[in-house]
Amino acid sequence: RCTVMSCTRPVADLYDFRSATENLQIPFFQVRGVTCVAGYAPGDGGIQTTACTEPNPYTITGCVPIICTRPTTEGYDFSSVAETLDVPNFAATGIVCGAGFTGTVTAAACSSAGPYVVTGCSPSVCTRPAAAGYDFSAVTEDLQVPTFAVSGLACLSGYTTNSPAAAVCEVTSAYKVSGCDPIMCTHPTTTGYDFSSVTGSLALPTFAATGVACAAGYGASGAGPTATSCTAAGPYSVTGCEIVVCTRPTGVPIYDFTGVTEVLEGPTFQVTGLACARGYAAADQPVATMCTTSGPYTVSGCELIRCTRPTTEGYDFSGATEALEALTFEVSGIECAAGYEATATPSAVSCASPGPYSVSGCVATTTTTTTTTTTTTTTEVVTTEVTTVATTTVAVVTDPPTTTDVNTTAAEEEGSEGATVQSDAPRAALGVVAMAALFWH
Image (cartoon, rainbow, N blue to C red; front, side, top):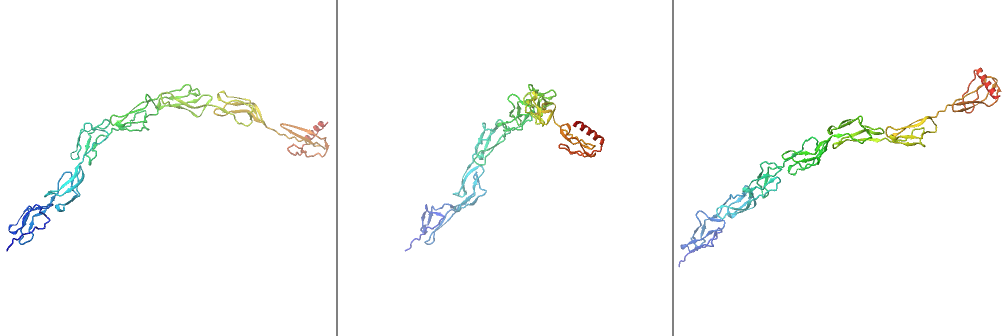
């Protein structure tokens, strides 16, 4: 007996038979409800099934891989993407968030032919900056980066009034502002002020210039030198210094102003011819110093002359009475030292500058030595003894005359200069012998 042949279901990975209805008998073969598995879709002719001709699996065709396309979704940057676009093998790497967007990109295959799906990027949102010098009180802001817009921005007082502008942030952060810069003051050149030691901020919002001083020849008035900020770029202003006009000081009797020449205005101040009064002296020259505020200039350098006791040789100060200040100078009781004699009463004269006073009236004592020799020219010999004293010579005959030859040598006695006299003048010798004989008798 003949039986009906039937086909069997094929093993086909691309097809989903879970919803299929099948009549597998060849004469009555019919298959419906077969679909493509994920990643595949029916081709242009759809899914086709063909009955077998003998008991075998029937054939099925028509499912082809789904091919995705690259999307154009805003906020994504595909410039470095690497893609495999058929769904069964789908892969897309290298996608990043575009400018103004942040996040981590995920790419998913399409479920039907068309763009694959990207997610993960969202618009960056800027924040308002805390920038000094800007006034945000009237600002209108759209802070999402793709549609960023800021209007109504202004500059605060103390900052330049150039048109301020806002620039979008690159990532989620504060947007950038520009156009409001601090107004910068500069140092003035006002006569009478010294700016060499000025410190502090010259920027208008935080202006604090300190160290302004009055220049030489100028003095402080009121609160003294003060700096006030500029209101626009340029020099700040200063007040509090005025020209100094000095006057001649009084009540300084130790100075002599009789020969003084004066220029009393501070910038050209000059005093010449100043001297010390009698009894006073300066180590160099007395000095006049300009006043720092209008008023008397100051003088210095003159000091009371005080003498000191000299060490002059030949004077004895042991009994001296001294008043050593030049104005009341008086010294008495000075004597000549041993070995010195007075030519006048010893006296002292005041010093002209601090130092020893001078003395006069004593000179060293001098001694004159004279030697007298007596010689005889007869047969008598006269022996003499010579005694020497200061400025006085005495000849004494100590022995009686004796007889000897006419030509004799003068005897040298103790205390004489040892001179030997040869007698060639008989007449002079006879006179000496006569005087000796007379003295002897």
